[in-house]
Amino acid sequence: MVAYNKRRCAYVFYAANGGYACSAIVNMMRLRRLGEGLPSDVDLNLIASDGLSKEIRHVAIETAQAYVYNSSSFPAQLPQPLGHVSGQYNESGN
Image 1 (cartoon, rainbow, N blue to C red):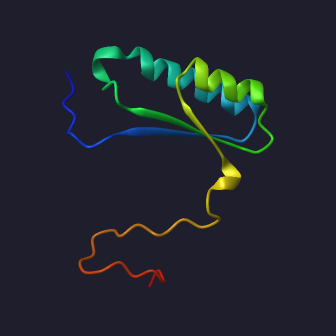
Image 2: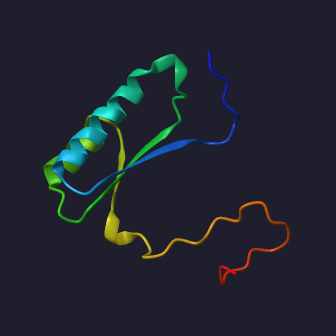
């Protein structure tokens, strides 16, 4: 049995087209079926390109119990990770 800490966990998949979306959905369903080895509160997320069909998005939501997001709703550049630094976060990235 795998021990997990109390922090929430999530898996995130990106789908640029229908083929990648189907692969992501299959992998999400496999993660759901792990059962005992995966906490029930783990979130499965699909970041979908804007051209991905509504039908595929619906399958991800209904079948894999995933949250689906449009890729255009994410910022163009994500903040840089803090790494192993102490002190306050420098928003300029330097």
